[in-house]
Amino acid sequence: MSRFDWPALQRAGIRGLGLKPAEFWQFTPAEFRLMLGIDGGDAPMSRAGLDALSKAYPDEVTPNG
Image 1 (tube, one colour):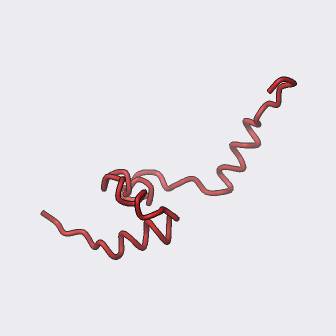
Image 2: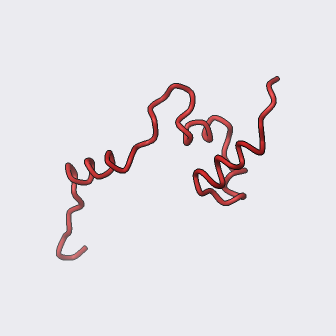
Image 3: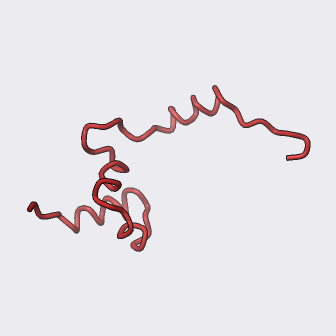
């Protein structure tokens, strides 16, 4: 069984991702690694990517909504 570097993981989650301590401890290791962009998956979306999606699919404002 491999050991976790808890201080480094806490810094990444609390400082890096802005999680509250209670939120940090609710994640599974797999979820946490996904949020950090680890495991060869796609990197987290950048601000430019979000802006491009917002431009391509703008929110529609309805008269009653």
